[in-house]
Length: 84
Image (cartoon, rainbow, N blue to C red; front, top):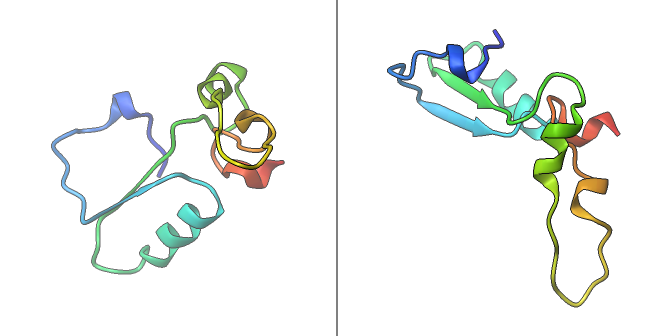
């Protein structure tokens, strides 16, 4: 079931909270579907690409390597970077 954060009952207790609905997060959440554990899978983006949400990925990387802009290879949406 997919719910918007504003529609959640914040009193609900979860055994496991997974942050990020990309390939790894979805896979882990699916593994718990038929268990006794109550799992929440959190995603900050929408089901489909939204440029306003993607702007939240703007940032800089530092270190010895040259990197592309963070928002050029990471997607803030359901299914994450597998959408690229």
